[in-house]
Every structure is written in structure tokens, then in C-alpha cells.
Length: 311
Image (cartoon, rainbow, N blue to C red; front, side, top):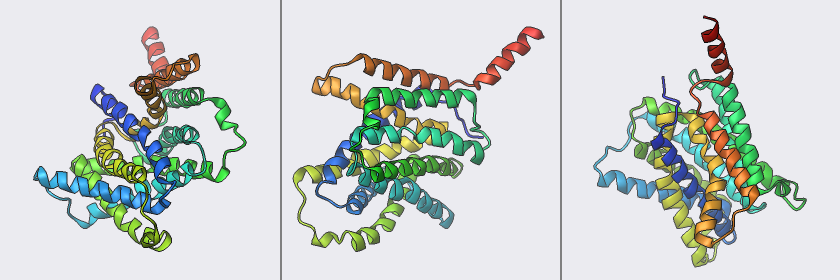
């Protein structure tokens, strides 16, 4: 049975991952202004796969083998890279990045529902539901409720980001199988990004026709490079370590940490100020994450205490 608690090391990885993936919204927003959707996503995963291949080669780690393993990589690449990344890049071309991060914060809510029906050791508990609802409310307070009611928002962009969260949640459940295959995080990250690259290449070639595009500006090129090296190669090494160690719901929690990470970066890097709503939002997120990480469900804990007092 897979471990489902979150230890200090996993929390550190989640925080680091939230900072890296928080920046991905900015990089996508910059890149999509001059590069088509599928070309961005293909370039991102292909560059990530190349970097991971070099790391595997440099560390003399065996490359993954076997039809069963690569079939699993293909499935993971489709539902964790091809579908959600394409949808989010499209979504950020239509809606504000802040609203996209609010929608993305629904990922752990979908994850706990799917995990309840698809797994034996990540069942639905009251503390998980309460914790993630508090976390989502914290994200809404942090970003600003008015943004969700913005009449200028594009419905298709919102639906695309929502569909991406469902795909990401499903991927966190699907990816649990790699913990039983005795694969290292770098092998899993390489396998899924390479598989996604093979799927995306013909799609981008046919739809985007990249040979007809003009050379994008330097900021778009640097953004795609950051997406590939930082957000994909390094990000997925951290992602699969948490997934293997702590389970699907744990790794999905990173989406709740992305908005406060972006806020903290803005304070220390850009000199932005901290408001009461910011403190309230981060407080709700912190409370929610604490409740989610309780070892037992809230109702079970109350039941155990009653049993202890009556025995």
C-alpha cells in the first residue's frame, strides 16, 4: 500500500514546485502572444525530454525499457502533458492568469473525488473535503472574488482551464502505478515527456505549420526555454518524487500553493505590498493544507475519542 502522508521533505518539494509552476503562467502568457498553442507545448515537452535524457546519461542511469512501461508513459504523457498543457496555454490566451490559477486550484478537489473511487488507500474523508474547500476559498480570497465575476472573461478559456484541472487530477491517480514499477523520478519524467513529444509533433506540424511562422521575439524564446527546462524537466522530477512518496492527493495540493507563492515572490522581488485579504487568503490555504494532512479523517478522530472516553 502506498504511503499517503506528507512529510517535511515532500512539503519542501511542493513549495518549490509551486514557485516553479507559478512562473509557468507568466511564461505561457508571454509565449502565446507570438507562438501557436501546440508549438509551445511540443517545444516545452521536447526540450524537457532532452534535458532529462542528458541527466539520465550523465548519471549513468538505465533508460526505461519494456512495452508495459512505455504504454504507461504514453498514457501519462497524454493526460498529464498533451491535454492539460494545451488547454491551459489556450486558456491563458483568453483569460487572466489570476483567474486561470483559481480554476487550476480545483485540481485537488477533483483528485480526492477520483481517488476515492479509483484507489483503496486514498479514500474520501471529511478532513480532506473540508481542507481542500478551505484551500480553494483561500485562493479566491487571495486573488480576489471580483475576478471570478468579471464580465470580460472568456467562457471558452475558463472551460479549457477547468478541463485541464480534471485531466491533471486524473493523471495524479494514473501516475501512482509508477511507484510499483521501481522507476526513478527522472526515468518517469523522461518517459512521459518523450511520449508526449511524439504525440504532439504531428499535431503541431499539421495544425500550426511551424515552418510558416516568423521568428518569435527573444522574450517568447526565453519563456519557452524556461517552460522546458525549469517547469518541465526540473518540475517533473519534483512532481514524481512527491507522487511516489505521498500519493495523488498530496501532489495535487501544489495547485493551492501556486497563488501564495506568486504573491510572496511579488513582495520580495517586485516590492509589492501585502493586504489584509492576502493574509486572510494565505491563512485559509494554510489551514486547509493542515487539515488535509491530518492522519485520520475528522469523523474518525471524533469517533475514536468517544470510544476512548466510554471504554
